[in-house]
Image (tube, rainbow, N blue to C red; front, side):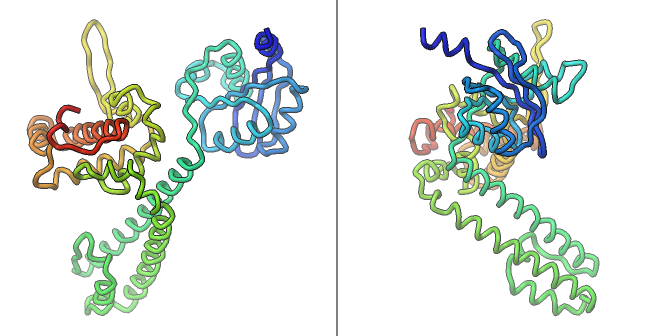
Length: 349
């Protein structure tokens, strides 16, 4: 009875978040709008929103975005129950003819009220969120450094100086380059600027790696690194992206989350497969593609012969994605079951 009374009195709120201000629509159980409009995207603005509920319990639905994590935390701290959903799955918004921020908020409120929302997204605990931030920052720094190194090699190639892919990782190489006869004084000054920037980025990368270094001792990270071709960054990115293996029914569902599975279209009893869906975290797909490429360079990887046959039939690009998907499923199964890698059983995954 008490639960029924609580549900009768509960208010339902849809929110459309933006940087400076956000649209909210608050409705009661019957769908009557109790409050609607813009509030500042700040703690003070959200406090005003909660006050409009006049003490009643409020459930809020937000679409996942860069700001939704922060907004959900603030609203929960103010006493709201918060649900975060995938905006791609709230199709009714995309199909609305007159799409505005206000109609988005209204539709979200009604979907919440009527129980028609897609399943709520899993919200990672603080430790996982921090690891994700570290992994993403490291990748951004690595990208910036790669751009500068490509530019450096391009400048040197223009005067006939060729370098290996990893040559510029050594200080001695930079010293020798700056003394080359082909390098003019003006080019030398530009190369010195590039060297300073590359060294600064390398130091920043090392600092970020130092931040997450204690996590490398985690048994799950160690377990995943037992898979040939999987290094610490792949293992940490997997744990950070998935958070909890219990979220997924099996390794196929987990693989679907990575976006490494091919899209499917069925019509008239015929099933057609297309490109991979690319849903889920892009950094997770990226590291497993890297792991697959590393595996193909190994002499005795358990799946190398299988992958090479696939390369012959379908081409390297398709084979690398298929290998990445299969290796990921190994990793997920080991993580879920708390087991170590066994090459004899690997092909069964």
